[in-house]
Length: 399
Image (cartoon, rainbow, N blue to C red; front, side, top):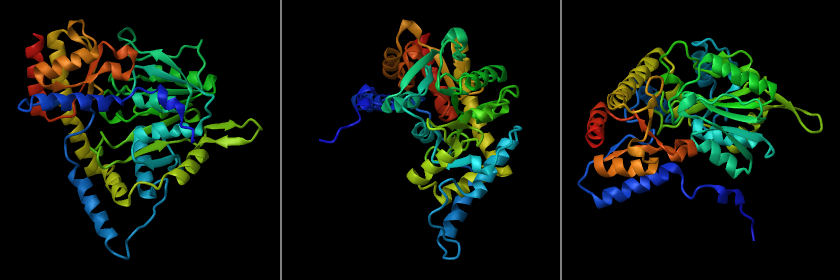
């Protein structure tokens, strides 16, 4: 009999958002005439920008002509897109080489797949609460995980504990689910910790486009020395509405190196390149042309308009929390509002309460870790009309 990976037995029976979908489906079957407003899963609702769509059309036309048809593309991504990403980083003062950029189908995939490059024996440090993919993928691999506590007292921004050694560190900033964002001084401490411990930071910056505070870093590479210890993941899912189009990019600096047990030099950049060439066929040409259009002047203007729309929704939600005196984080440099559950409820109790009483769907904080058990996440990824209505309903059941 083939032996299965028994680490899967350590996972929760269902993925967080699968359970949310299951409960919403059951409610709609029971109450088919009730309208439901979804402020739960972080999916976007606005369409792709005109510049992006035009680029997709043009690329599709190219694929229909023998002289411009393209088959297999480079697993690392086409140069035109990698160069556009390099230009984007340059806009906030970070210089990268094109061969440090790897185009992917999104940050979720890469934050999980990057674990292929590390030994099972590594200790992984993960904040609690946090995006569940970090925990689940390392659990699948059987790694030792140590959690660091994000709480209201530290603004859900845990800092390094020098008494704990970790080899791999996950950081998400702006954070999913809490919306909290590390400042430069805080990231400086994390980089110093990683360098002192010969650790690698896996830095998820999928929401960097929502940062409006000029004093906050958009990339960990704005911190000197981070290129020696940090891999950065980013996505166009929220930047430009690519949740269904699927395109992101991962930065693996050439300066991150190690030595094997028998003394051979190892480069994380070369290892990731080798891994991608073996296990990944690359992102479709049409999608990459669309992604490159995002970084054009017109494309960025359209993307910023989308972000402004979602952040207006975030303000509507945050204003509601302020009016009701509910403690929360996020909503300023993030599309997420993370708030304390009213009435002393735990997060799944409040999920059912909000769905039953108001027809509003959010995400229970317990799905992001034990520290989220009394907290709840709402997203700004809906239209303004629905967001206003959702908050009207929210007020009616809480006042």
